[in-house]
Length: 241
Ligand code: GLP
Image (cartoon, rainbow, N blue to C red; front, top):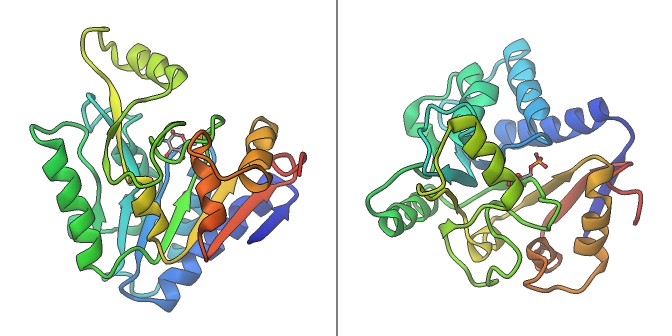
């Protein structure tokens, strides 16, 4: 287990962006998984800025999102596809064949999930998966209680996120909202994982996932069993270690 602890948001963002850029440079056909949220936006923009300042061939790299909100339009600014496009995919000029997302809406989610995972495998599997961390220990939409052998599927949101998205999209209660996500077993198949967490609000859960027992009650605790997982933390998120 490697934990890298840095002081300050800009050092944190720089280090995370450099890890992504390193894989982009070293493996011209790399498959790189990204997470959305407050933790990752700045590092994504930094990847794009750094690449623009010193461009190299990225035409064969595949980026994908580890999860997506379901029941909303893909154009909604809070959809993961829109966030990733805005933060990193469009600034890097990645074409549609090299940006894979799970759909926000589908008539057949199980088939869409199977196809998504099969496409990642066809491209050689996940070289680097950058994972954000929920305050309840979730990874993607794998909420507490998600089986460790779960595969890519539709799951539930946590209440705070659901309330925000209903408000922002004016979605009435009778329309179900959820999240489609890589399963925990799929996450564990990534060749390399970078778990990123910053801020004091993540300190308690960071301690639990690193020092606590490996349990389905805390999904991200599964990463203790991954052979190549690094935890990148700012000093606030690491303050209870
Ligand atoms: C949401 C996203 C996840 C993300 C997590 C952490 O659940 N669907 O992909 O990892 O939030 O978000 P934040 O970085 O804003 O705390």
